[in-house]
Length: 70
Image (cartoon, rainbow, N blue to C red; front, side, top):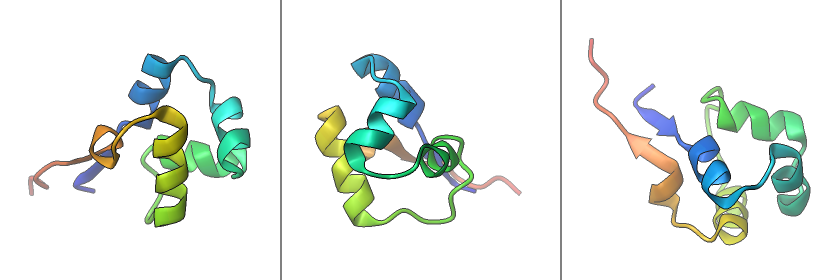
């Protein structure tokens, strides 16, 4: 998939655990893990907004587009 989720990088920069972030943005740790490990097929804007608010970042700090080499 050409969209890469760099959530783990931003979480490390902000020194926040997955469990803490999941609790703060009100999603399950399992769903956060799916997103963090590039397994998600979609993300709601409300979830992205909550992540950006808690991590004090922009969506582009978390999401990265790469060309799909085939």
